[in-house]
Length: 341
Image (cartoon, rainbow, N blue to C red; front, side):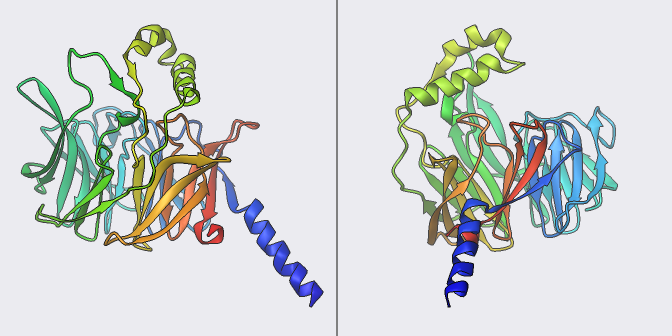
């Protein structure tokens, strides 16, 4: 009995202190996004797309480069989720077009769009596109249903953008705007200003809302310092930091919704919050209909207070691409969420 008890305690302790499976990613230097479907993991770095098998992380194919050709991409800023798995293909968003590839990375076709900065997600045979629109010199974030030919069919969401031309001030923690996901013929739009996920059917009719009402996290001086340090030391921004910092405007509290993702295998919504403790971030988990399931702190790493390291959640596991601080090599950390309840 004592040996059995000791074995159980050792298993519990091991799960608490070492919950992550770590997979080296020697092919990558500065990965930017990760997307997962049932069989594959897609990681992007600039205009390049790496396809790995989900079961053993074998590299199947690397394709894509910067340019205008059929298998070339004019890329978005990092973090805009360029790769979207569909039922029998993957879709790649780039500026001015949507490209289609097989799940193994073979080119199928591309569709040009007159909305160059829209980002598309599959919605059955149609698409949901989100981006910006201007009316009377005022900029808005919009979400529209698009036809298969990438023409606007219906606007379903509109919010005045935080950034307006000719106006100073960058509302630091709201720069990402709305978060959009599609699943099972529904459209999920996370509105950070209202701490609410609005859910629409495939016709663009609002059918219900999911409200996240946890206590908001206060923006401290430490948060501000970390934000400034990121831009002060960033290779691209450090030369303009002294001017750029004049536009920073910090709210008193972070939004309740930092980001959200859908585990399409377990049909759960994971809302990432700004609450953290001891290198873990708080997630609030709902079912697809908005029923609260749990609140859990998961091991999680950020680039800065606004930008997490690339992550995805699939089949009850958190996948996050992290640069090892000691080796300066990229790793994929895979964490079994059920083991941390």
